[in-house]
Length: 446
Ligand SMILES: [Zn+2]
Image (cartoon, rainbow, N blue to C red; front, side):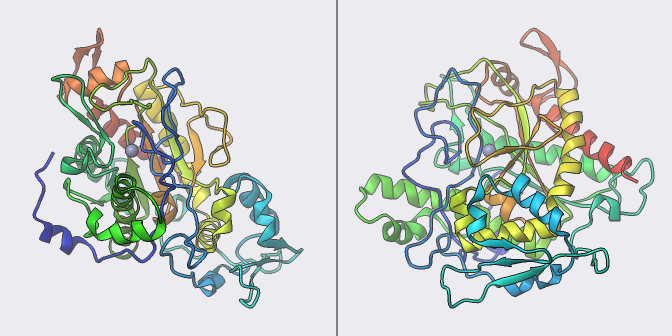
């Protein structure tokens, strides 16, 4: 793990990108997990939380968009005219991207087209999307390479011609406590997800390069990518939370920093500078751990991968998120994410021997993906904003008895006895299982 670099280095990494701030409801706190949907306190008897920075995003009072979002330019969807059939459009919309019928308030399906409301303002014209027909069918334009568009790779370089960006989840370092991805038992080493994901990324990069990929890291240090800090977001927090006490305002400003502003800055870097074919978001899952200095350990560990989809009714109501959902649908990212995710999940599970995570009774923010118990669709800030297919990894449970011991054992080569078994380091297993899954997918894809 690397030392923080001076702020100036971070400033060079990316431009200020707080043009589309949205937020999670501050009234719902997380304990142990970083899921804004998981109310505290967690039920420690349940197998685990839902992960990471999903956010039930509410409209800004001023704009009826996600907070500080810009009004989307719907004409940019014109490049997708005649690219999707009515049946494919309806299937993806109802089976992957939404969780109820709220979309019907905004999208009217006709035989040859969809009429899509772009605003709550009736004076703003709707957007017309023409469906493809057997007579008129245009291939969907893409700025990333799908599996089937890549040339056949040599056997020893299955990832040749592929540009992969690795996004190590969270920040770590001095921010680990603020971002609530830190816990410690007694004098043990503290567990910090942001440090662990970066360590896996540093192991994974040379493995993927050896397989022929061009690899970029979305962050290389435990400094934030965003140039904003919580104090820069205090006035926004105040404006959006009139009447709240100073403590909750401070926490909300921090959440705007480490969740919203940070991920939007990473999206700016991914979409405008790196421009990869695929993003790998690396996370470790957790169950609610309660007090981070007196954390609860749980018995079970598990694994799943998240693909973009399952927009909630509230998210469909926001025109910026409705626009993003349709852009994802029309770019056909789901098909690519499901293809890559299927092989990666099966390979990863085979090597790690992790069982699939079973979501507690499914709410309106998650859908299982048919055909693979390790795949779920969720609308997370990262997998929505990154403008290409995203494989969002959620293996291991940091505060499970089994994985906690492996994390404490640290990184090492070869096998060591942990929990009475001879095991590789959890970090090397993560990196090599993911690399093997990707190699298998792209090698067999012709
Ligand atoms: Zn995470």
